[in-house]
Length: 137
Image (cartoon, rainbow, N blue to C red; front, top):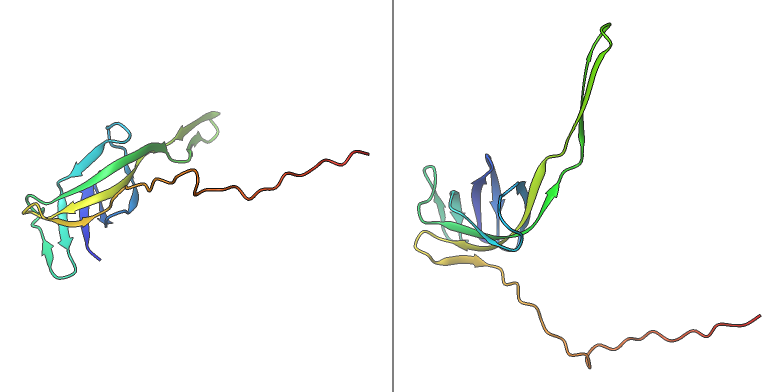
């Protein structure tokens, strides 16, 4: 199974095709393709390539699924005997992405995830639910 290690938002992530990640918020529209060029390591089952610090030309492509907020973290400050209290809440913003392609430095596709949707005819899908008659009292 091929994978890559990328850096974004000051953190490093091990990614493979079709993997869904929650990373620091990206300023992009939902549904757009994002390219990560800070690839630190590439592995394609046969060889492993390590960058110093990055692999030039290697790209990881992902699709932005949605932007979400984390749960609220309460921050409470109190100064004793002064009747001074301060309560703040913080919600960190994240982006949920799905990795679609991993490309090597020469442009060769190492791993790819297709978002193909199979079309189904209405004749193939039949409901098996039966109607229930109401009993009168």
